[in-house]
Image (tube, rainbow, N blue to C red; front, side):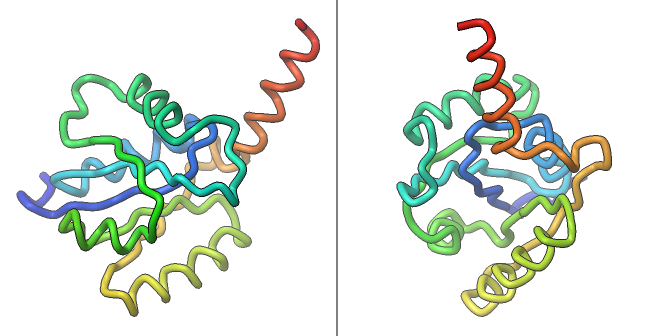
Length: 146
């Protein structure tokens, strides 16, 4: 049973939201009283859809019973959102050693700003799935049918 008030944030571009993302949300929601899936609005990431559309897409795939999970968009630093939302942790998925090194560096910075980061390893069956790979596969499938 998660603590009665512990809140966490799972940030990302989610362009698109993959089965790996959904698995991380499922695992994290069991550890915290409330989890916010925080859709990053960052023009530098060059997402294919605006943040509101990506947030709506995430909401559509979340099961109705996951009542402690909400979705929001944010264009600032994740730690700023955490402080505003009274969240004590940032959840980050890690697929491989390259991800781990990058996420460790971000986690160290977040810690200096007062927010702990929990790195959640991807399940082996989902470790090779990235949003980029999904976008590429979808684009290739559309090219073949279009």
